[in-house]
Length: 309
Image 1: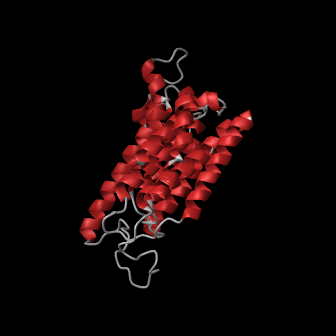
Image 2 (image 1 turned 90 degrees about the vertical axis):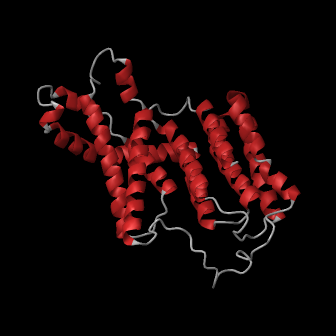
Image 3 (image 1 turned 45 degrees about the vertical axis):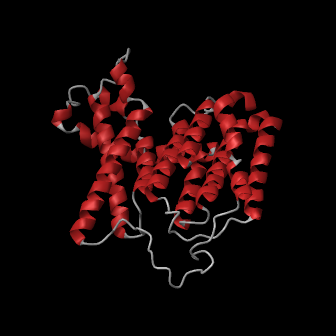
């Protein structure tokens, strides 16, 4: 069900991304929804055994009320249209989560809520702009170090370096971090930071090598050149880096004889007896339908898009 919400949210974001900057910021919400989908599928709670606290009517009324306010704002103020899609996606995700799983796996609900903030247009643009500006010096330095490798043959055509520096790989960094947290469970430790930095650095290095090897400075770029400079390539490189990190962490865990993946503990002692009491129903059918009704504005956004603006 959450996968359906992520797909609908991606469609809604794409339909209203025309006014965004054409520098990759419109891809950030798609990355966030992809990370949420991966995390929900990988770390979903077990309905049969995981304890929960029932969803209260106040929670359902609050979520639906916020959704109504967002939709009314879209119809009343045309300029609010693109800005309201992010909040509607967030509310749809939270409502669907509570309707399907209730208050199970609080860490997953928190992580999903935080990642959903990247679907908000101002947040996505701010994150992309910040990462891109931060990468200006490190990316240039990495390009110049790679240009010294004879195999890349940049010394004979030094102007290729200046063309390549325009492609900093900001989406590679964002996608590596978002998907990395979706695939793996993290603990605040030095090993976690080293793994994350190594993953981002490796993905960024691969991206820069591909850019240096490609004839991106041609006046009439070929289809291959357009594919190489497309945001899809940056996301694909990040996916490969994250998969490599996951394989490395699995091998390390098997070698150490311990689970460093950060699986949630099953020990229920010294925890809230209400939240972790087994055998409690998630919610009544009426509350479940109320929470799932949050999908209605998102479906309309995904299907008609511009008509709601």
